[in-house]
Amino acid sequence: MNVLIIYCHPSKKSFTHQVFNQLLTGLKTVNHKILVSDLYEMDFQSDMSEEEYVREGLGKVGNAVPTDVFTEQEKIQQSDCIIFVYPVWWSDCPAKLKGWFDRVYSVGYAYGCDDKGIKQLAMKKQKLGMVLCTAGHPNEFLDETGVAESMRNVMIDDRLGTRFENKHMVILGGTLYMDQVKEKHLVKAFEIGKNIASYCNRHHA
Ligand SMILES: Cc1cc2nc3c(=O)[nH]c(=O)nc-3n(C[C@H](O)[C@H](O)[C@H](O)COP(=O)(O)O)c2cc1C
Image (tube, rainbow, N blue to C red; front, side, top):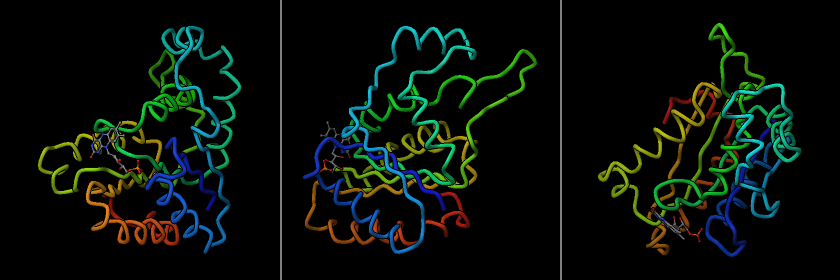
């Protein structure tokens, strides 16, 4: 498969970076074509400019999108699968990744309708969307408090939405208790990479 990884963490010393590396190592055991957008490394601009807002807000699909947005859209066009890797910050993805959605999911590309209410979207439908996030709280706590469900609603149901045929979210929780979870999470990240194609046939989770 052609796999695009959208990776978002500011530090190479982080646990999330180790997860990212294990994922990559797993992916490389199979002959996938891999593209990476390392949002901090790229210094990806997360704020929407006024010009972009005018395009989005008024649905001016004839206006060009900025070059950095176009580059990301080109990567999506070359992909069958997108894997999002990030730490949970305040019960969501980091702002930089939120900004990636704000800007790269432009009107006419990832959403929007014509005069007749028909969706004519340019974004290539992806076979698989995988969300792999690390979280300080244990999964049980995130489940009990409803935070895991709300993260799934937003990332899986809304942001990935109908743009992906198959969608999965794996929360690597409990990093506050790193000694207890580190090994199993790194093994899990490797296995997700190694077996990524099989997630196209698994039930939504
Ligand atoms: C700004 C910030 C906000 C955070 N918010 C949450 C949160 O809302 N829920 C949670 O479970 N963990 C939260 N954490 C913990 C991170 O998810 C945790 O640090 C990460 O999963 C693993 O650490 P890493 O930064 O070494 O990759 C937060 C951490 C930071 C720095």
